[in-house]
Length: 339
Image (cartoon, rainbow, N blue to C red; front, top):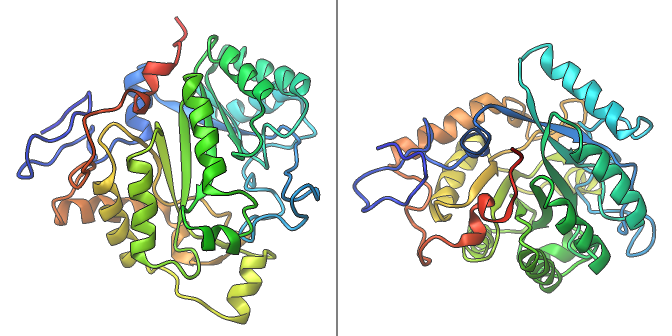
């Protein structure tokens, strides 16, 4: 069966499809919402992070590269409008795409004076090719003033906030040096929900010391909490990070391709059918990636996940045990789409 509006299956005997997939992909959501293909532009607001500037720590999270998870973002030396135009030119050399998401990705993108944030976010959102603004930040960097700004901009075009939770387990949060607690994350999500700003949460699968059951608990936690989207990220070990040094000194188990795809298929089945899946693997820069090297073949990974879903007769929502669709899980509930 194929459902464009993504309802749950009526029973376990029939798989549910979103387009040609057994999960509600970001691509499906964007095409259904904007009526065409939409590309994400990785932008750099030139900010740092409280986990790097000494406010919390100076070392950052153990997995984070020198680029602050923005290794594909543009140069912060360029003004935001120039970053957007350069990115559009690169994409249009391969595609005739006309619609784009302004994605502030590198470091912590609300860690600056509100006056500065207002300028760069407004520059991005007013660009005629931009249909939505996505802001990656920390749960402990959302002041009332920042929240008010995001809510204001959300009246112009859709605004999403991406929060890197990574795991619900306190021991793992301490190990990766996140510098925040699950309680702080919950407070941030509640504040964003009150202002009708959709939340996209990142989880890392394969953190040192975590069992599959611990990872399932993190996925199940998000399945029953107010998030509109989720990014499932395979643990990447990047060169010159503390995680890389840890792995070199005392190697810990990493997912094989087969193990990861099997496990992600199970995780997809745990999620509500209304949750948009923004990512299923990740994009570690080839030049920086130490392991696992198989992850560089993203197309193979995604195809294998789709095959596992088919072979196991799984689909998004099959094992979800929550209640009916929640309004916060539909981006359209909380956004004003441009005319």
